[in-house]
Length: 526
Image 1: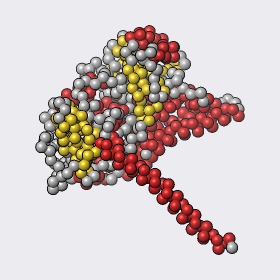
Image 2: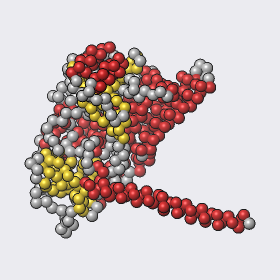
Image 3: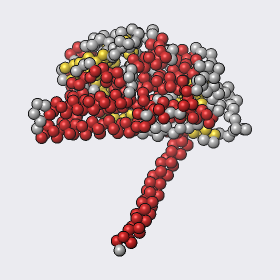
Image 4: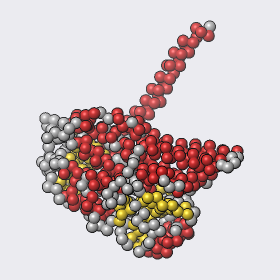
């Protein structure tokens, strides 16, 4: 009897699972698609075309429209313009920006700057060379130097005023006759039958215009209003930076970035000119102490100042008394694009990581090199189907470098934050001691951080080497049940940090970039 009933039970189970799938999962998919359509409708307008072509009576047609002229937008405009493309850049504000992030360029990013012919943009802005990091914890410190022996003597990190750097790149891009920089605010993307054809924007004097191009690249930064139409923006805000400038301050390790493993979270310091040091105090959560009520000054003096190296203590208190505080939410957003014909996201509009390691500009410049090399064989951007294939390859080609830097930044932030959990305390201490060993134990992680050796497998290997090192410290010389339990939780905690980040970044493209189609390697058309 049981055997006779078995087929019925199997069929009933299959029908039941099908019903659950259509009732639950399909509803979620429909809801997600509805949300996407609503999001797209906010920043995408449909347009009517004649004979399948789009034309504007206001602005001459160009090859590429770039929305935003920050680090990514300005560098991209110069790069594509130098390749002979007609480029139209629309930037909300062309005056010099004043930001507290985007001030530290890693050596890997500087190499990309050289590759793009933009290395002179760090000249004449009082930029400072950076040769590594100094890590501080509980009164002890270790120096972590970049491995620069194989490179020209000029290759190092650079730290500077963000606005000065951007203005230099804007000036260089604008000097090209085929690059037009215009101040204006992009209102929406223009879409025709699923393909982005251009943008609608408002000029500086309030006039609304439309501009058309076969390729629109959105680089309007972390506050982008257009990203929702081109990607799935799962933005996480784990903390905020409180920024100050310390004047005439001598750092303990000259020409190094400084990371103080404070409680509750890290404090960063690095030079931004010959007389100024940027201090960034990380405050967990999305709210910071009130500046107007004096709570911020009290927090900095009573909680943060006692944890600082004595060499910077007086300059820090003087900056607090001056009261010129700036705050900035720290965002993390994996790259989750909706491949859209005629459009591409780049820079912080597309992909963000915690700024602890200063990897954002390196990722952006690396992406620009990838895109430039990808588009060079494609002289006619009006071939929409071919262009779409090339742009889809961009998302795969960028993954190994971008995902390594992203994963390291987000993972290090979680490890470097103080925690009441004993296992995470051990992980934090193990990380400091592991890096203090020197040799391959510091050179490997620093080469990842600097963008000089962005290999995903190397990142995972070093991350778990730190965890195993921490377990070994717990178990030697005599293990106890409590120490064994803490060690097991340490390994579990390390897995809980690294694997969700890797999963969000995309395992297949991160570790197996060879799946890219071969056509992108076609020789340039002369």
